[in-house]
Length: 257
Image (cartoon, rainbow, N blue to C red):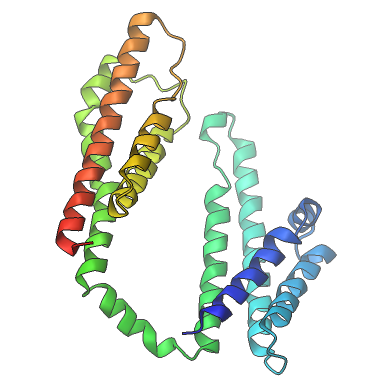
């Protein structure tokens, strides 16, 4: 399959959605929706950039497809953003307001799916999708790595949470001085990175990651509570790193990387 075409499509999307789309254009789209001239300019730009970068001068179907789907996705995103804004305006508790991050990520995921479909069409590779999926779930290396990643993201996090629950209870389970679910995201990221570093034999990078984690700021509580908090964070961190390393070494042994 021609990866150059995929890169071209990705470049066109990045230019249209991030480089040439200004904050003023985004605000105009949110306020005016379909009535906004900048909305239509952005949509036409997405198709035009796709056409110019692909340089397939007789092929207008894919740029048209990208332009139409881009407009539809942006319109749906604008509607969802309006609903999100209305919801947040009704909620007085700031901590319970919803972030637009998930909406943004879902929008970009749909754009990437459109790009993938356009790429498969241009390379006549739709017939390779099912064989690729079949290979993914039958190839020992792919399947082992996928299983390991699933394990360290979800079950391992749950196990660590259960084991450290008594320590959280001793601390009073007071998370008012922490970002919501920040610990969960930090734990997932550190385990995934550790797992990748193990597969790449970059154990020194794991040491660097652990040192960076040790810079975690502890709130200015009393000395005894601060010490307990430090011990709690250290226990969770060591468990997280240890489990990721064990899983990584097990994968290396199975796959013989």
